[in-house]
Length: 102
Image (spheres, rainbow, N blue to C red):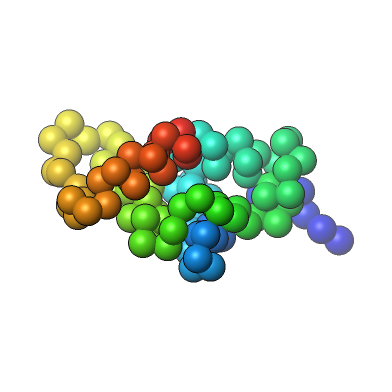
């Protein structure tokens, strides 16, 4: 018998096939992923716990996943240290952040 309880872990798949297994809470830092994974949405992603992000490559998605956890870890802090971002990824990260509503 299947449970209606959302999975604790979800899989994010990049355009080049890399898979990142992250906690649902971390993935839901993204507004777009939160809506995709909402059990009330009846989206296939909500049912399978797997989101294929065809316009984000693996290198960028890895940094996005790091940001999700960075955001959770520092959500209630006042003096938040800067996150290290390679200069060559800045533009792609901005586009990914826009797409993911992060």
